[in-house]
Image 1 (cartoon, rainbow, N blue to C red):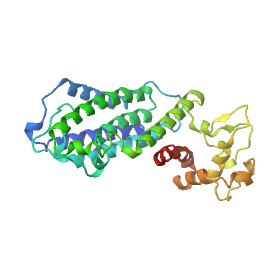
Image 2: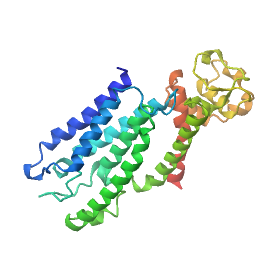
Image 3: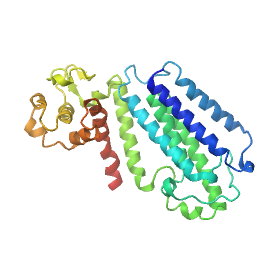
Image 4: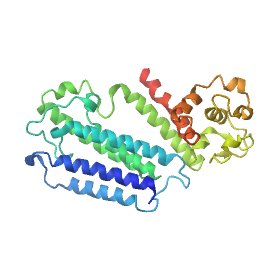
Length: 307
């Protein structure tokens, strides 16, 4: 089995084990009976586990490029948030299908919950999205109806908790529902920008994310990059992106990349984005591509956040 698929399987199993082990610490009377929605959850988990063992299902692209890497990063971050939030809830957690205030339940507004009211819901939706991106599957779109269902479920829970749990009504005014209030606009802009990039890469560049650098087959290529899987536009001269990509590989003018740049005196003073990519990649050539893409997306989050 591919290491990535094995990692995804292990992540899903770890997520389930944490839930089951912590659930056993709950008082027996709070455990819900077996409702239909639990059967749906079990079937969904089984389907996800099986998907990792099957050939690609509805592949996004025949050449996934960096999509699996980005998906794996999203999957990992979401798994970490979900488990952390579950541990912080402790005995104040209840099954998603049992909409009730538990005996002795108290408001948890520390840790992850100081900013978010439903970090587990958020993390689980993003975990599914990251899982499908890592598997290069159009099933990533399943995150949309899942998010809609979670939205309705969370709204019903909040009405119940505001009416029955002390302090929850005030907590609603100081916290975000699925993302921190101050970060909501930034995350929305980031998601929109990433979705636009994903659509462009999938439909125009055969899944090769380096198509966003707009490398021209007619322009010179540094020998050190000759073996990289660059998408090369056949009949165009290229664009700024290809030159700033070269700068990200050689920000200190030590490798001779400047001779392949159209106007080094113009380009190198504009080094902020390539330098950030070099730092994110720790100067390692194999990591420059995803680091450059990440560096280009960062302003989509912080710009709206600051505004």
